[in-house]
Image (cartoon, rainbow, N blue to C red; front, side, top):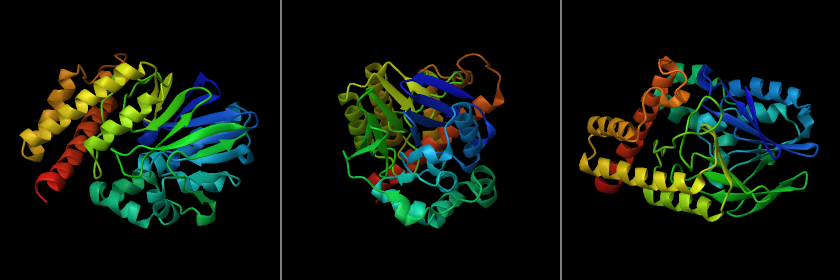
Length: 314
């Protein structure tokens, strides 16, 4: 499945963990040159190559692979993509370079959460990226492909190694997880909620990153999870409030994981999110949609629990 948003931007459904509408890989086309933003998992390469064939994009026309951060639902396929696109440079936050060159520790961290078998099933074998093909831009640095400029912006809060990518010409931001998640099966984001997943959640930094994105006055924000947001200012205000609600919940629970988890589910219900939220109301009984609500609640609770331990129990 591929969505065309105009301005040379295409959203390819990565079929993350075999499901639709969960993770996007963006293709940005300028003339005969292409940039890829996020790679999802190894299994995303197939859908991306199929989309490129539909768009008549050759493999050697890919100049850049831009990673918002190195969590494996965004960067797990980076090594495979770099092998497939021999002329591409990998662009990643300086904190993430070592994990792309040698992904062993990154994989070990994921295995500690999901187990070795589940990690292998979800992501396959991560391939290292040759260090000479990796670029680590400074905050605010501009990079170009085909005459189109992209600005790299450090946007921590979800992770210390998070970057967003701003396209000044079209006033669009590719936000990764810095502007929340808004799963929707039609490729257009619905209700956005913050993602406070482990282990580097920082609420103050998340507020600042949301504000930084809004300060650019973007007309569109593209989310990895999933699709395009147009009501940027309203979504930002909503995210600020929800981040504060998550933090208050963690404090009120005194770091009790079960209480945090139950509280997040209540917060989501308060926001009007239900098991049909993820399908845009089209498929209220789809079990995979309910599973993703459960997964998001679990990950947000883990992140809040880790954050509380660092701030109040250190």
